[in-house]
Length: 160
Image (cartoon, helix red, strand yellow):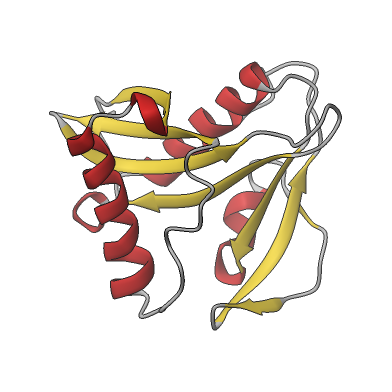
């Protein structure tokens, strides 16, 4: 499979243009609300205090994730709203997105463990990046999830 030529963009919500923010929110709603048939509050009030990691190819948003700042020193950073455009699946963009998200967390929040809430069927995917389940399975918005944690890493060279 040929290597994907994408650009990595990491910025606050306020630094996104109106068009870029619209594309980001549309992708999340198209996948999480429409495709997964899950009525939940996608606009949860956390975007303004988060960093938004976007993979862009040919001017098009192909994948994104939301990185939440640890609430205090020593607390966990969080990766959430991990999404790949349906038009670009099957190209290993999910793996690329997670590598970039982990790297961004380790650079931006050094020494912080990284938490996420994984859809249960993706548990092995996230385990491949060093995440370990820390909860039993539970329903979140009608979808089985499990909490996972990646211990703080002193260096970023251990990202698969």
